[in-house]
Image (tube, rainbow, N blue to C red; front, side, top):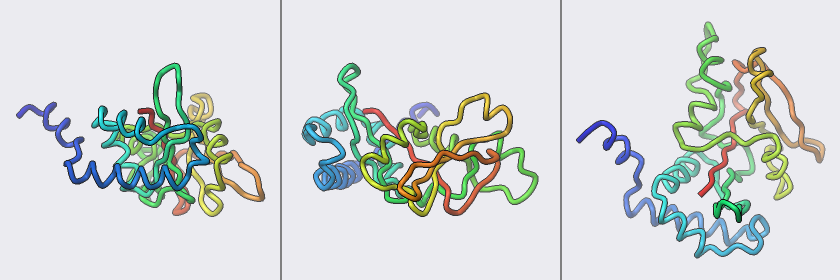
Length: 193
């Protein structure tokens, strides 16, 4: 087996894993209909079953505590949009700095990973500030934690990175050094299927 095929097979779920994930996603979809009014689970499931790599990415989101759910549908691209909808920043993605450059710049007390590399490995993208604000219209998220969001290159070039949270009835956007990391800060992802 070639290395390329091996990577592909590593990113495939077994039949049992697929069935379990679809069952979990369906239950969450049905429990939170206000997040995706007018959408039907059967159509979402058809798309998921036709894209095993996307299903693998959703499983990675689930395994790390993201509780992914459908938050929209792009008619032009015929894609369902999933965001991490866990009440707090996903537990399996906290205590990470922003990106690899930030991780490598730390001289001591380095975190184990960084948000950008983790998201890339999972096949997802960090939420943008705009997406984060859209998510907050669907519920109250990150009332005790915070989440890194995509950072414009001009801010990142100066050593900074952006994160958001929800406090005092409002969404706040903050900055920090990209090399910082905290037990209560992780990241939320998005995936189009």
